[in-house]
Length: 124
Image (cartoon, rainbow, N blue to C red; front, side, top):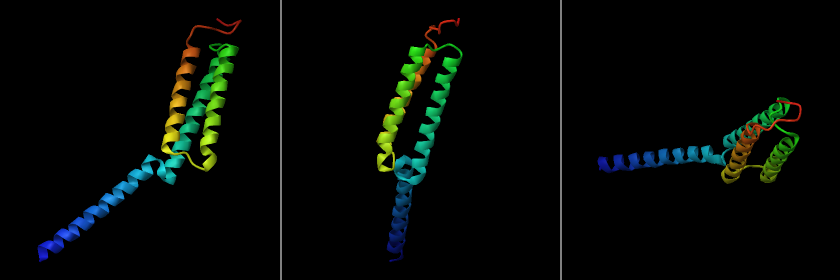
């Protein structure tokens, strides 16, 4: 009799621990408020870094005016996408993945344009 009580208690504890683990995983994958702050900070930080790279490329002559304009339009499109995703007050995991992919593509474009050996007129 004592053995069955022990098994029941142990199984209840195991299910309780499993539930706590699942709740923590759910929060980490974008369904909790802390994940929302993480998504926002990550996106905003990457956008700020990309804008700085574009500005630096323009300042040092690595970007032509047309390249600068194209990269800035791409950044504006990403901001618009983020604004649409935030319309419901949150960014879910799928929306974050789409933004992350768009930022990856933009980063590659910035690198390509800054290192394509074209220079503004008057710069070497």
